[in-house]
Length: 406
Image 1 (tube, rainbow, N blue to C red):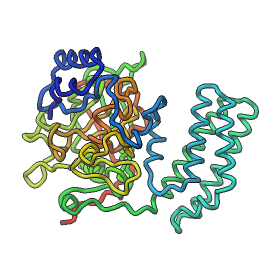
Image 2: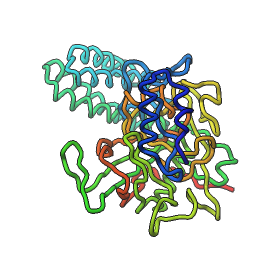
Image 3: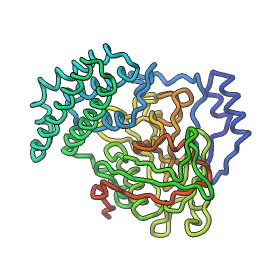
Image 4: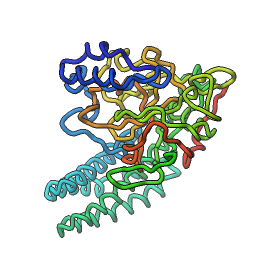
C-alpha cells in the first residue's frame, strides 16, 4: 500500500505554496511501499466538490467531538430527541466560550422540547425497552433541572458538569432507541467470508515505548491507553473485521509502522519481526488474505456503498454519516487504486481542521471511517514508529459480532 504520486495530488490543488510544501514532505519523508497507504490530505485551499449537501462541519465550525459524531451516526432517532441533543451540545459549546447568555438560550430550547416531547421520545424506544427509556428520560430531566439552576446562578463550572452528565444520558437514550433499528445485512457475497458488526462495540488499546516514556504536553506517561467505539451501523464489515481481529489477538505485539503527524498506522504483518511477522500483507484466512471491501456511507442513505467511493457514485463532497472530523478517528487503509484491498492495516487520523478540513480531504467518502477514539485521543500525539500495542481487547459489543455464514 503506497502514497499517491505527488504530482497526482498537486494537479488537484490551487494553492501552490501548500502544494510545494506537500511535495517537499513527500520527498523528505518517503515511506516504504509495503507500509504506506494513500492517506495524506489534500493541501490547504483545495475546494470541496460541489454538492447539495457538503460534508458535515465543512463550514466555519467543524464538529470535532467524537461523542457527538457517534450520536449523530445513530439511525432511527426521532427529531424531538435530535433537537434535545443538538441544543444541549450547542449550550455546552457556548458555555465553553463563556457565552453564558447564548448557552442559556440554547439550553431553554432543549428544556422546552424535552418537557413537551418526552412521551414521544419514550415511544420511539423498542417496546421491551420503554420502561428503561422512561428511567433515562427522568434522569435526563434531573440533569436539565441542574443545568437551569446553575446557569441561572451564573455557576459556569457546575453547569458544565451537569451538561456533560446530560449528554452522556442523551447518548444512552439514543443508543437504546437505535437498538430497535434493523441494520441491513451486508451483501451475501461478503458475509460468506467476512464477519460483520450488528451495532456497536468498544475496544481498549494500550501502547508502550520500549525503553522510554510518552511525552504529551510535557507530562510523561508509562503507556498510552485509549478507548475506541466501533460503528457497525455505518461500517458493519469494516468494524466487524476489526473487532474480529482484535478478539483473535491479532494486533497484540504489533508495532506502530507509520507516524507522520497525519496518521498513526499499523497492521501490516510483513513489516513486523518475531511472532507477529507474516509473509503476506494482511490477515490470512484459509490460506489467502481476507480482504474487506471499501465501505462508505452517505448521510441520509439507508445502507453503505460497497466497492466504490462517493465520487464513483457521482456524489463527491456529500456528507459522510461518520466523517473523518475527530482527532483519533479510525480509518481502514487500502491500496490507492484497489477499492477492495483492505485487510488488517488501519489508522488513527490525527485530525487537524487546518490540514484536513471536513469535506476537503482525500478521506471522507474514499476511506472507511469505522469509529472514533472516545478516551485518551490526545495521547496519540506522541505515538511514534516502533511503539508497541501491548494489548487490544474488545470490552463491549462482542455479542454483536456476526460470523460468516457460508
